[in-house]
Length: 61
Image (cartoon, rainbow, N blue to C red):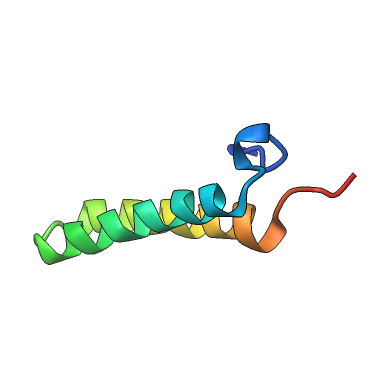
């Protein structure tokens, strides 16, 4: 796994949301600039972070 959702950095919800929104925002910027390749790369990174940090989330102990 590339991102450890149990790391203390990701404990707060707003940090997880910000880490997911930034790549999606950058993907929108790249698409609007006409850079399809980088837009797809950042959209894929955002999708992976969304799945890992939001859907899966940290394990409750």
